[in-house]
Length: 512
Ligand code: NAD
Image (cartoon, rainbow, N blue to C red; front, side, top):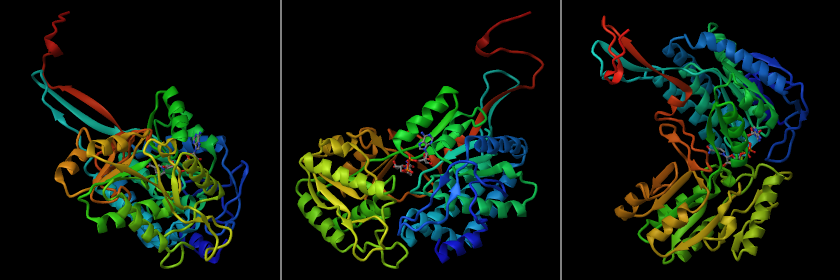
């Protein structure tokens, strides 16, 4: 463990040696298999810990169920005060938490700070929301009756998260779930346990400021897929919010559906951008490069398919390759680095396999090789790739979690839309055009089929105020802003009769 990581853990209040389970501020060692940790920066160990077992996940669920009894009747603005104080802890410890995000996920410092800022932003949003969980009053067809709907707490929420947004995705869920009156049990990625333990340590600090809040309102369990399946299978967890690959989402959704639970799925993307001949080329190059190589192509919203009009495709390719040639690749902790490492060796192998398949399918590959000079030894660094390929090549249908940008050419806008929507995933999308007809068509009912539909900006880098998520194989879930909170609550429709009669709906007569 480096001095920076040790110092950050101490500042954040994470007990060492590391322990895999925390219910509130009660830390317990895992009873499962050992989990070796390694930094993507240079392969250095952060210290080993033993994984949580399914039985330990059950304990956290039991604590959440117990906490729910108190939390659901705590006034929502008081729940908001808990989130406000949690947000203050994040502000105080922003740099320490960001240092752990960099150490574990390999993000460059500015992106890691941005991820923690996203947590702070969603806390602010949730605090406001805690006074705005509005229900409707509806005109009743019966005299002397009031018809209304109330939004009520749902119960414990299970959160399963991925390595690439190791803290923000949990915060999107936790901050909203808490103000809605739901305790949270979090199973983070096995690749990023430290950041999760750090978030929980800040919960523990917040709990000491508000001793009436039940400890089981927040738990973390560092476990494997079996821990995730325990959450998915539990009848005491009415909502499971799962972020990760489509393969994982299918496995979780099946388990949750068997017990008729609710799942909120945030799965893989295969994001496209159409660049029309009228596009502002300066803006296009900057937004393409940021979206394709940011986080080393390991964002769910990373740009993977560049759909360029044939009249500008060569110019665009040359300008993007020119920008790629100057990209500072290296240690994500260094000022000026823009491309850090892939998360691990399997990610490098996945990238090389995809590039080999692209070549076999007639693609022309620019870049994509491993970089070993000027980067820390023990990490997996790559030069981002651009692949000129036919739009119907099978490899283009897949999400490869690495910086590979497929360059596809189109002749007319309808064809561009067809190519754009012709993949199984439906997360983020963009059109770059100054033709308002194209822009509006892209946003309209026959346009992009994604959950995130942007004009003249990158598909990557969402704000917390909007609902985040995507369609088709991306899973259909929406998290974070707008009215995503409704998924964390149960809607009760109330009919209140304040008359002395008993009129029935639809005019039914039933006199006894
Ligand atoms: P992953 O699917 O390998 O793992 C995600 C989480 O699921 C981990 O916590 C893992 O332990 C757990 N898990 C794996 N198999 C499971 C199972 N059978 N049952 C229950 N839990 C299981 O994903 P990853 O490699 O960590 O992350 C990359 C993927 O996540 C990409 O596909 C990316 O697009 C996606 N992602 C999506 C979003 C989004 O909002 N749509 C955000 C971030 C990442």
